[in-house]
Image (cartoon, helix red, strand yellow):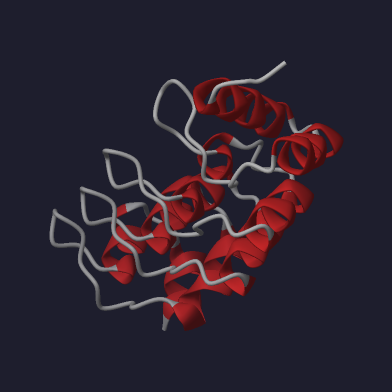
Length: 159
């Protein structure tokens, strides 16, 4: 049975969202589809994948997925990994060229989000790689976000 590109994109993103590594692998190999094939909502597998699945991120990125794909709000997978605190997934994305200095539409970098969410290990990883002087739409740098969030341990990490 021949599937449309949309059907394959839907199946691929569904497998990624479930954290089904074998399913993602099978769809990529059987369909010979690009890993950035869109689902019916215009999103890629990397954008909807279960963030706690670094093996899926690695598989998609090895097959050529765009590590810096952004949705209409400017949110990239690195923002999602920073928000959810999945350091292992974030490390894989950075290894494959994901920018940690890509702002969302509010000007927030992944480090701003990791600070807001209190993910210390993620902030430790991002700090030496991030533009710490970059300000979000509210004019806050990473250290300003840490101060506003009343997180002295984060402030120490950023100095």
